Length: 328
Image 1 (cartoon, rainbow, N blue to C red):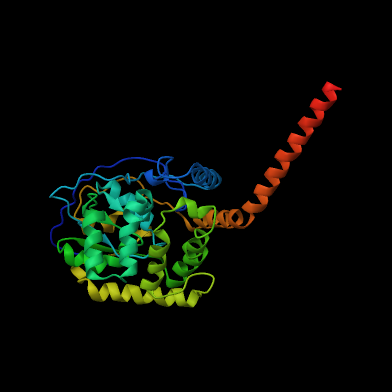
Image 2: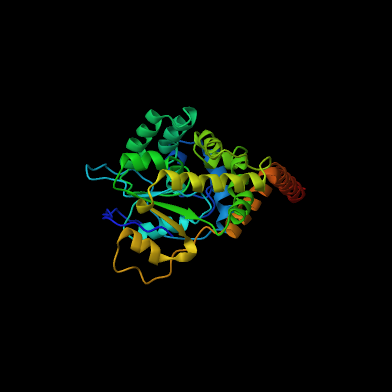
């Protein structure tokens, strides 16, 4: 664990509480997915998928995804550089508990098209300086976030570190490259392709697909079904080396969620440290089970729809026969 010296100010953000169903498809309903913006049949599809995945959900405290008025004091003071599936959701909950307004994939999905269009611009321009600067201003500073973690924000950690030189960087890690690769292969590697198909595609912002594809290009690996565990492991090792080479040691904390609060509080110079258990959320087993369920729904919902229609038809015929018998 690397622990820096120097000063660090933790900016207080507005903290809200809500329950976040897992995985990413089961978000709080963005305003772009309300009846005002979406045809009713699409809204029904969204609610159907949400209902089917909520049974596999876990809950935690979160930050509301709606826009807030930017202030001149808004600064990013903590930058997450770790890949998704390295305890980034637990880190988000921890930073939120410490008073931060933290940007995670959940906030991206909650904001809907309002954020996704900026990430799509970054994807289309392959992370050009102009597109990233615009995104930082519109999404992170514009919505008063003071910390970042998880994909896709972790992929612009270097740009954020340059933009906010007083910010500290946290590189979240797993026990081993093999552990990370297995978790990714079971979860987010499979999730992206599934949300390109009905009914899940109606639950994510329109621009999400391009941004999600850019994540894999940025880390230089293929996802399921073409990606391999060895390829994922190599990308993970390469990324850690890159972050270490980019961020000075006195500005970097390498943190495993199993280490809990102590190194995090020391690094951020916070006292007293929380006495509650360090947050644990979005486990691989829960997320994986939800992706399994989504996979079943994706490939069987047309058949289920046919069965429902047949049942309705059969019930209608039965009612008709009953009415004829009563008349006779």
